[in-house]
Length: 358
Image (cartoon, rainbow, N blue to C red; front, side, top):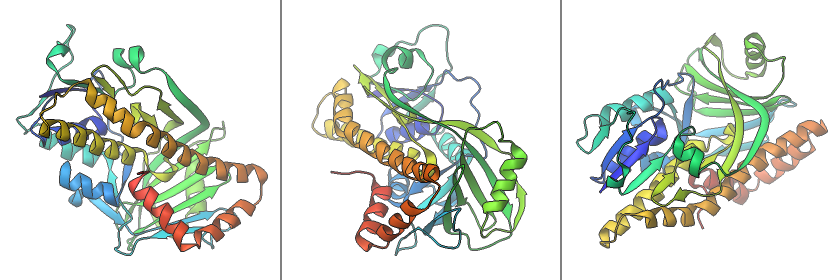
């Protein structure tokens, strides 16, 4: 069996590693000649996905930092939590720097006999020799031809990311503050480093000095020594209307893109990898062909779940955006009461960890 993957990012590499672990040949090519890894970008991986990644893709214990608690505030009252999530076994999710995960996956794949990276050629690559073609890129011929129809939403916002250096603390509690101009997340990376993701409603009045001022203004526990380079990207969400065309499958952020406030984007992709690999393994065990039927089963299994999950994240964003427009904290107080209910709190934690499974 042979799979062709289009892409050069974390999704393409993680999927390639999961496939070669099943002794499946993978050829990978990217149309992006100047792929750059943003050193201020990080991923938060839920406990169940972290365990799956370690067991079925590659061990990432050494490059991760475990988070055992999440505290959520509003800027109207930073002394009182509106929601609080924690896990009895000391791990809600783990934080990893994108560039470190990229290096670990790349280094391992290049030593694997089942993997080959192909340089883009002017001549067309013969694709009929591959059982499946997996596309993870936004801007290539397959995307333009087969995967342009989507349910899309823009937030009129941009996410600003950086890493701060600070004095050492235990640093295993993530903090999210819903401010007047958007949600601000403090995501620990080590005892003295923390990732910042600030989703700010678009305005001409946003510049580096102001973002630094806002980070310092809303900081509730760090003695900051240095704020690193600030990167930014536009925020939008979408879900593809069709996941595949014949034996060509869209994957990762090309399938679904969501608001970063809950840190669920890469977690959705890991769950997709799990489903995809299981479908292939089941077909191999039953002696069935690996063809477009894999893509059909993949879409049938995940499309509705991913759509519902994406919209649930969007609902959270709209909830706090609506409160911002009302200019009061009635909704936050209601949410705080709900959060004290142990059943609801556990349900929120379970969905964040495992997604929607029914």
